[in-house]
Image 1 (tube, rainbow, N blue to C red):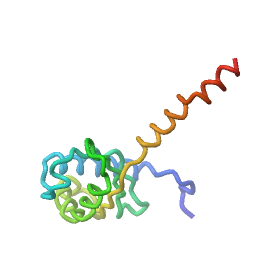
Image 2 (tube, rainbow, N blue to C red):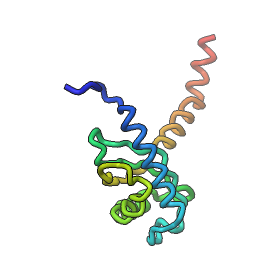
Image 3 (cartoon, rainbow, N blue to C red):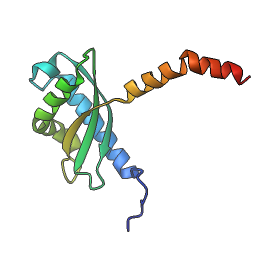
Length: 131
């Protein structure tokens, strides 16, 4: 049985995830990926979740100024091996170079939906009647 029986990531997973996030951000900022969907889009890497064996990195990205995030995510997944090679020098201290899996970050959409719910007239009415 593992020491960390809960679903919380370990300190090591968090630390390595942050290292990978910095390496990926650097690769994307330099514009090394020659794909039209990626070249013309500013991409924010919001989070990297590492698997327990540190061999798979799930990368959550938000394309800024682009409404169709699926096109950007598909382009990133298509170029994942190239990006992995470009990020390798920054992650040379790792025993295994992780495989990158890109996913759209929907957390901002969730925050926006919650904010809209809190500002709705029904919630305002309930808050007023509670006083």
